[in-house]
Image (cartoon, rainbow, N blue to C red):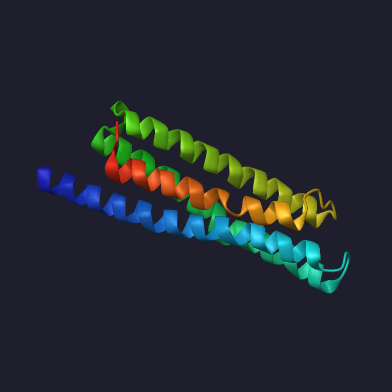
Length: 147
């Protein structure tokens, strides 16, 4: 029985990491798409293509990956009992923030589709750094388990 639980843990962990990679790739791509979208002439065919690309990225990669990261991550928490450890609470807070960032970007994609360009290209380029910083902190917490 212990062997089956042990193997389940490794499969859950592998799946979790795979979908974290997919999710992070999408989180890096979407703000860059927004920059290119905003640089396209308003109402042009090119702008319409960026709207479609943004929708596809969210629908096909980002949102399914987010859901699977959460499901597999919660299964890992149940399997390992990590919820009792301080490093996990800090990691959870960062993942919640990153999930909120995902939701904000999803809403911003809808704004752009309506022609509402609320942020400058420079601000979008800076926002592109958010997932990288969060990922670095999350990896340190999960691997080093400092507290």
